[in-house]
Structure formats: structure tokens, C-alpha cells
Length: 561
Image (cartoon, rainbow, N blue to C red; front, side, top):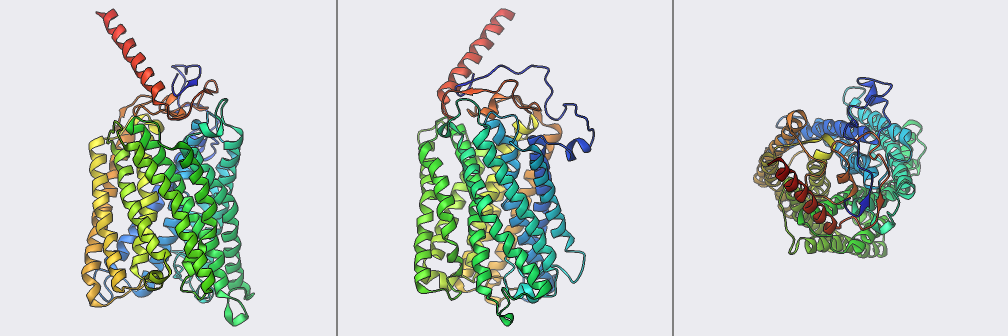
């Protein structure tokens, strides 16, 4: 019994999901699987490859910016690398990251379910993700060169350029379908497969965050799908939707693009916030402070997030009335995020804090994401945004929110659920070193961009004036530190998978349902579907269980003696 959960113990001889026999063997046992855990790990493998590819492009771009003028590549190559780096990072890592990997692996177990509602649809989502990712990389090697528009594909340039925009856009279109199907699957799973006793306000906060995210995926993603399809049709047939020479309106593209892409920011960050709400109570040994406000704030962020897309367009020529309304809504959407941060800090207060690697990444996230959020308010204010909107200040803010937010929590998630996923443990000391190394590199890389932007350095430029070089040099050195930290972390995790020490079912003392099953879990997660009788963060029950285990160990030792 743990977390007020009643269930029949697992059979000792029951094989884990890695070793269970199926009708397929070898690689086909993975490629044709419908097990949510294997699909989550396939997402993780693919995302690791795509992330490292995009990271390599980013480092090469930083090397180019080390000196004014051409350093290692031409302007056209820089623009293409810039576009592909953005497409891969946004559409293949940042947006699907936490939901696709940890939503797939952990969410059904946290609900007390044996799988997601539609296992075959789940596998189809992964195949669509892979097709989109391969198409994006395929554009490197065919036709007239990689798209050079940036990841936003702004019209009319995306319509007129002779590069492989259509292939990149079609890749993003397919990835959108994968996102929609995943969102539908999670929504149905949460509504229909919660175990007995798990009412809405007994669900873990990670489940709440995935629930809010899934609604955004289902409702907002079709908008970007239609928009990208229109770009392809415009390029192929000149139908005149966005091209002003054919009577189209390029401002319409921006509206349609950001109606999706700003809610997509919350597709990226809401699941990460859900992970934070799992890690902090586990390593503070306290119930989460303000469970209901945190849960409701996830829905609040999802709702208000639909209404603020216009703050990306303050300098585009929209009306003053629109700008004032969008500016006000931008400040309002910050309130639910503030609720979460204050409740996390309140949970830490007087807690028995254990700073493990997952907790360290989480604390770094709160610090770095807070910088991103506060600098976002600068861009939400009309007067300052008009001066900063096309400068490196936006590049810094974007990376503090996206990579400093979702990226760091992806790393925290990997360390937190690593023993559950693999049944082994990584080297804790090396993991902490990599966390500090990543934090130092991250801030050295991106904080100088705030200063550059404030001084007037324009973003998206291949070249710059000599007075900005010192900041570019510092930033480039930061990229080397950051990449070193990431590679140390990856090496440590891979070594843990291959030769890490075996771990127990609940090495962290967690209180949600995934910590009640063996590590790694069996094929169908539970022999008997559990019954929940309390909330998800009842450490009183966990402490009772630990005391009972200690008494049993003492008794066993006395009997031996």
C-alpha cells in the first residue's frame, strides 16, 4: 500500500516490458509494438538524435558569428542552418518532448491504466513523427537547398524563395498530425481510463498538465496545418492567399501562424511545469502546496494562451486598439504561471529538501525560467517591444523560456524517471556536475544576447558591426561550455543504461502510482487495477510504509541472528 492505493502485489517472476515475449522478435518487436512504454522510448531515441543534430547546427552558427564577415560559412548557408535548427528544435524536440516521451511512458501508469486508450493510434503518431523528422532532414540533400526563411516561414518570402520550403513545410504539416493524434489519445485516456477512486482532484499534477496541453494540441494545431498547406498551394499554384502581388495578405499569414504558435509555447511549457510539480514534493518530502490552484492554473494558461498571439505582431501595423488589448492579455497570462512558481517555492519552505540531480535541474529551471518570464513582460509592454522586437533581446528571451524551460525540465524528467524506465541508476555525482556545467554554459551563451539586443544588435542577421563582437565571442564560448555539459550528461545516462546499478521500485520515495510498480514495469503495468483512496502527494502514507519496511528488515535481521 502506498499513496492510499490498494492493489495486489506483482508476481516476482513477472517479466518486465523489455523481456516479455511477443509474436515479433528483434527490431520488429519495437517497430510494431503498441506498448505505450516502448513507444515512449522510441520517441526518446528519435528525439535524442534530432536534438543532437539541431545542437550541432546551432554550434556551427555560433562559430560563424565569432567574427564579423564570413567566418566558416556563406550567408545562404547560415540562413539555411538557422531555419533547419529552428524547425528541428521547435517541431521535433521542444513541442513533442515531454508529452511524447514521458506522457507516453508515465501517464498511463499514473492513472492506474494498462495502456493508453488507442494503442495502435499511438504507434501511428510515432510513425508520423518519424516521417516528418526524416523529411525535414531530407531537405538538406535534395533540390535547390534547405529552406532559408526561418522556422516561422513568413510570407511572402516563403512563397517566392527558390529553396526547399515546400518540403520543410510539408514536414511540419505531418508533424502537426502526429501532435493532434497524440493529444486526442491522451484526452480520451484521462477521461476514460482513470483507476477506481481517482477523481479529477486526485490526479497527479503531471496528468493535469498533459490534459491542458492536449486540448491545445487538438484545438490549435489544425490552424497551423491549414496555414502550412496554404503555403504549399500558394507556391505550387499561385492562388493568392498571402502573396500581395496576387491580391493576398502577408499579415494574414502572421495572424494564422501565431494563433497556433503562441498556444504552442504552452504545449512546450505546461508539461514541463507538470514535471516540476511532481519533482518538488518528492524531494521536499511534503505535499504540494496549493494543489487545486496549480491544477486550475494549467487550464487557465491553456485558455488565456489562445488570446495573446497578437503580441508577436506589435510592429506589423495592427491597430492601436488591438495592440493595447493584446498587451493587457499578455500580462494577464503571466498570472497563472506566477501562481505555479509561488506554490512551488511554498512547497520548498520548511521541507526536508534532498538535492538530487532531478531536483537540481528543477531548481535551475525555476531560476532560469523566471528570467525568461520577466524579460517577456518587457516585450509585452508596447513601448519597449517596439524597440526590442527585432533584436537579439528576443533571441535571448526565447531561449530562456523554451530551452531554459522545457529543455532543462526534459533533462530533469530523464533523471527523475530514469530508474523507473530502465531499472538502473546513473552516476549521481556526474549528473550534478553536468547540471552545473549546463547552467553555466546556458547563461554564458544567452545572457549576453540581452545586452546585445538592448544595444541594438538585430536578430536573424548573418553579419554585424565590430562593436558587438565581444558579446558574440562570450556567447560563442558559452555554447562550447553548454555543449560540453550536455555531452557529459548524455554519456552518463547512456552509461547508466548499459552498466548502471540495479535500483528498487521506488528509489526516490515518490507517492504517485508509477512508484508502486516494479522498475522497469511489466507489460501491462498492473496485475490488478489499483484503487486510489487519497490524493497523489500523501507523504504520511509513504512514511508509514517506510517505517513498516524498516521494522520488517529489523525483524528479518533478528531472525537471522
